[in-house]
Amino acid sequence: MSDVALNENMPNDALPRTAPKRFLGPAAWARENLFSTWWSTAITLALAYLLIRYAVSFVDWAFVNAIWTVPYNAAGQPDASACRDNKGIGACWAIIADKHRFILFGTYPYDEHWRPLLVCMLFVGLYIVSAMRRFWNWRLAVIWAVTLTAIGILMWGGVFGLTYVPQERWGGLPITLILATFGLAFAFPLAILVALGRRSQLPAIKALCVLYVELIRGVPLISLLFMASVMFPLFLPEGINIDKLLRAQIAIILFAGAYLAEVVRGGLQALPKGQYEAADALGLSYWKKTGLIILPQALRLVIPPLVNTFIGFFKDTSLVLIIGIFDLLTAGKTALIEPQWQGFGVEVYITLGLIYFIFCFAMSQYSAGLEAEFNRHRRR
Amino acid sequence: MSAAETLTSAVKANAPPAISLERVNKWFGSLHVLRDVNLSVAHGERVVVCGPSGSGKSTLIRCINRLEEHQEGRITVDGIELSDDLKALDAIRREVGMVFQSFNLFPHLTILENCTLAPIWVRKMPKKEAEALAMEYLTRVRIPEQANKYPGQLSGGQQQRVAIARALCMQPKIMLFDEPTSALDPEMIKEVLDTMVMLADTGMTMICVTHEMGFARQVADRVVFMDRGEIVEQGVPETIFNNPQTERLKLFLSQILRGH
Image 1 (cartoon, each protein chain N blue to C red):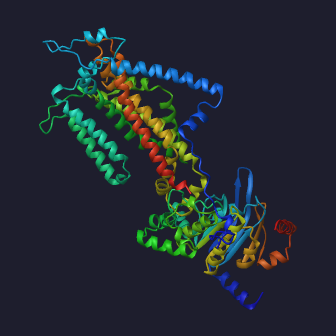
Image 2 (cartoon, one colour):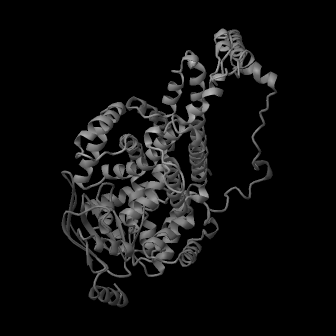
Image 3 (cartoon, chains in turn orange, cyan):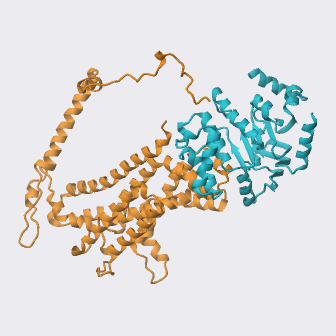
């Protein structure tokens, strides 16, 4: 049996040794990497100077000289004059303190803000549960169905003693999370079907899938959103009016579906033909072959571009502002319209950027972990 | 030919063949890769197909479980004719195991999962039973201790033995081998050939495309020599190797032997 190592009877001096250790102290590391030549030293010093200079002035602006609260007058209106005097010297985080509920929840009735807050928490909980691999079975489908129903009930109300809130008054973070979550949750299965269809041997299915992908990819998302909001209602019979948010949602699903389909197709194409043949030779039917052999491998291959597309679409949901849907970014912009807060855009946009960043960074970190875990079988 | 051998071949001739190809033709574009191929393999017979590269021998056995479609002629496997009928194709693929040159194990599944997948999903075998069966075959190919590793962690020879075990777990009536040792390092060829010899001893119907002439001499009932899409010569190994009739076979044998 050649399982037995061939060099078993070799003398002791042929035994494997561990690789020599290569440890450098911080000083030696810096000398080797930062100050090895005179121009390397020059670049290190120049960059260090710029870094320290701008970091110090940013910290001064954002923290040391910042104004965190402003006084309110008798009418309950904030007095931002202190911020105005401090402009250019320190940040005015008071605008966030004053407007954070409007930025997060938009024009949703003030007394009912606990409902969108709970919705946001439900979404985050849903993401966390979905990320855990031990829920990756039929239970996840149930969890999703229950959570999304609960989110719908909380947002709309009208049952269980909750007051009814029409969709026009929804806004802020829940809108962004609804558009992104429903969008990707429906676009992803659609994308898999389209990617499989594009590789189908049935000419009609293949042509349909190619047509769909090319048509959708050929137009900007903005024009698709316009079509959904302005043109689509013209084709509907009198009296039927589909919710504006739903129309935007469908446009996003169709758009994301086309892009994701191409990503998934890339994974299908990258699989060696032998995998298809081995599955065929074992007598697996098309759907069993696809579900058990092809997709698990193809999707693992495309985790980086898949997450790339996911992150892109999470941010692209902000485009719905052009058809008047009140997402997180629109709510932030609207908060700046108030006369006393005009001119404090930087603070608001930094905050909005931070919120988007938290969600996107969590996605990319999770995908990196997932990739490492899935690639375990490649390690020796 | 001895009396006993004559008797066996007479019995084999009367029983319906395991595989029969009648005037099979196939083209890749304008390339005529199989030309009027006639071949009949009896139950329990071990056939070795050899020939220079590009002679159509791989295509021939890939037609038997329809990884390639033939365009003319009839192929019958275990009494079922290959056609566009997907039910018939599924029935045939359940009974025909295949081992590939590049192993084609499923890299995302463990060795055990590779072996139990088809019995569970195609044969509807309970998981416990499928695992017991898989362990039995893994023991027979002498790698039960690797059951929970992934294919990437095994050597080429071990992977090919797993591939054989995976095919056997479907308990096929016929096994096809498509150059099973061509992708292996020399020191691993023997372990795979040993496994195949052991399988041949169980009376399995086998068709092997291989250049391993030692293996052919040891186990083959018949050697089929193909060249340019045709079966040029066939017979018992002794006759084929010691007394080739055609120039093409003589040339092929001289090249093979020079290589060794």
